[in-house]
Length: 248
Figure (spheres, rainbow, N blue to C red):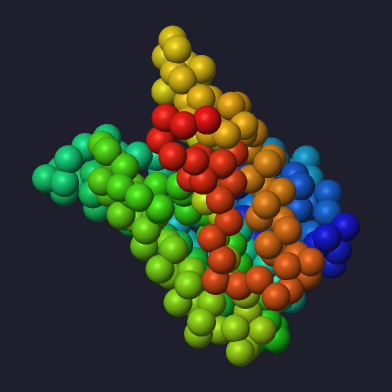
């Protein structure tokens, strides 16, 4: 029960890593607020785990503020937050301004907006913990994913800066950096013949991860077991970033 009596907010909670985190956090004792754009999915999941659903587009500052407000109004405070919402690699060149703006508004601005409101709530409550979902794309340039990679680099900058600013107030801020995870978002790519097998060769463990494995990492970072960990980047990638390309 690593989150016993904690109030948790999860963005992007309708599917994949977010849904796995919602189930896990609830099982570990948290009261969970699920935020996502898909009303039907989060309503069903909230009913399953006894949580609260809030339809949220993290690109909207008003939506981010409302999600935090619901947590505080319903449960009296906000203890932990997993900023997981995001969209996949853009697959376009820098000159496509629409794709650039859309990707940055969700994957970077959305995280910043959520953090702004979460931190305010946590300051009022005497502290808390935040985990931002970044990516291994935050560690290096990623071909054909210019906006995605730039956004994820920015998430790490936000994470480290907030950790520096708010540690003295009892708020820890960390990031998880997943590698290739078997989720609905990666499904179309992994369903291409040979791609699932090829992607599995990229890391040291020679397999893909499940969403629950990322959720477990976020759980630990948000729990009191990680009480002296802040400003960290935790790679959940099977050793992908630890080995040289083509080696292993």
